[in-house]
Length: 116
Image (tube, rainbow, N blue to C red; front, side):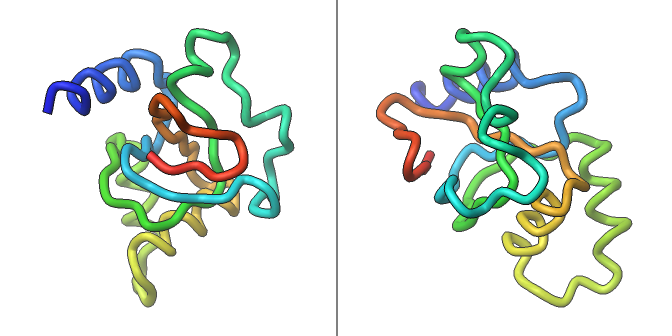
């Protein structure tokens, strides 16, 4: 509906030009899922963007996302063969530092358990 459309438009506006994946519907627990990013690297460059997006390495139960053309090429190149669920594959590629992934935050999201 209107709330989702507004959230998507704002997330796309604030997403960095080099994003690969922007998760819109997802779940994930921040602590313990970091390999390449430290806590400081998760924060957005400014408060306005930080209220809308957050960098992420590993999320699951993804139900909606935007994949950039560059991100799609990276995923297609790495998926030979694709031998696991797509959600796991995409999360693993992000965790390994091969995808520049972000989650779109919604009102009420907390730092300990993310879900959008």
